[in-house]
Image 1: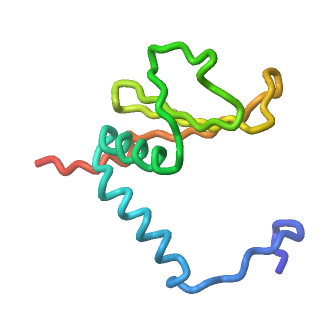
Image 2: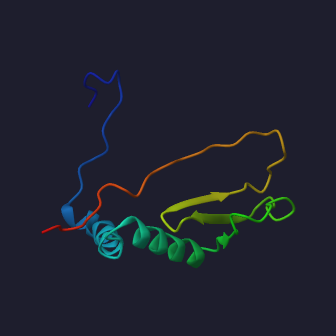
Length: 111
């Protein structure tokens, strides 16, 4: 149906059970990431399992970053930056950035 969206229709409703695997995966991530430091480590572990290579922040990236490569680095173990270089990347082609942050929610219980 098209409402006020100018002909844009919503996807069909699905059952809750259809979404449980993703919700369970999300809860596993949250459970292992109670603070920014754990979040960064959990994310690094996931990235490495997907073929990302850690770059040392202080080392120059020249000649280390290649087309088709997947990389990440951390800063103070509380920030993580990950990126993938397209197979057809050429200098000057441009790039896209997606960002997020790990400080909220900071799932700490304080007395």
